[in-house]
Length: 350
Image (tube, rainbow, N blue to C red; front, side, top):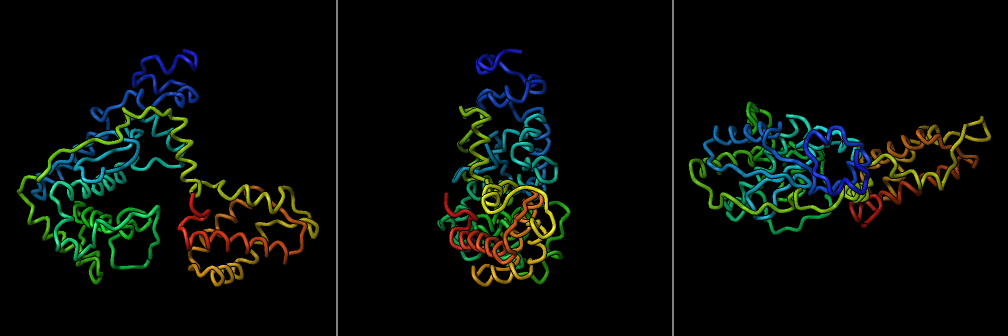
């Protein structure tokens, strides 16, 4: 096996990715990865998407390419699929580095393809420029935020991807509605009966009938952010991704919790378990943090559970009076929730 310095200059084939040690794999540039859609399981998934469009008499077939993430470049009727899905070893690495490999099963891959197809279809037929589209979904010109606040019990939106993604932006509302409409075997009229979202589904049904059998205004587009053009190494790529998505990782709270408490063993009255203290004060913490931050209790509870899990995993203890320790925890949780309320991130803006 060549030394690390040789990896960047040698030619790598698909078989090499299986046996290459992880440190050398991480040293490869994305542009050096021997990846293609043809001959992989993705080819069958794309064919399935095309078949679903054909079954609805929609002539458009979005071109797919490998990118650094799931995306449809703005204004371009093409679909970018994450590079790691083109090879089993890279799917495995993605799971290890990012805790999940989005789209790594047939079901989730199809959900995401239908979603991105909605974006590509919008650009192919200029759907978002129609006044009827804007009356139903809003305006595409609305700014995309870094993240979004959602109402989990709203019946004004379909539920397709996780985290109530239809509530993010008017464009996402449409493409999520389209994805539900396109899903084979789904009786969306029955599933969404009585929901305001049904009106959107019926609109999409009429809109698709209008473009059925018609060629797209734009059938092809630019492939932006192609994996083959990215010079960053896998190691740098994952470091950057983990920093940007720090809140999604278990260790997000660790440094702050270690500053407040110490790791060790509980010993009766002298050193008490922080996790047990959190459990004992759960109701009071949820009520007080919710009241002071103005954030809904279900969101406070989500963060509380993460803090509890890490306190238990780190075996944190305290020798301070319970009132002092609880005040620290309440202050920390309130700070996180105030950040979230005003910046939509637990740690505020990066």
